[in-house]
Image (cartoon, rainbow, N blue to C red):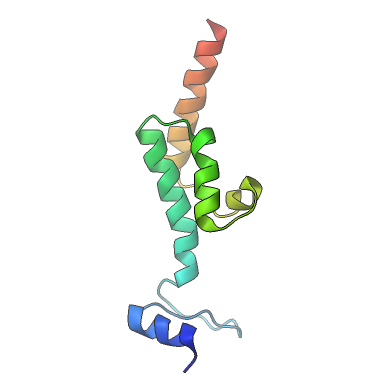
Length: 96
């Protein structure tokens, strides 16, 4: 059994299928999306400057540029609401 297949079976995760079969349950790759999204939500809640924090997340994920990290961020309602509030706050400060 290949290393990846053993890891999937030990963790209870489903392996990625190459033939497009319809299987259920999370894959290890799915965490590559939920983790960055969760980090951004936490940063917005903590009042951190996400623009300054994003390069840290990029490095943690092993990406060479921030643009590659954007593909892994999911537009979940909570994140969109927090980002919109953050942008509204900045816009109001600039107008004063």
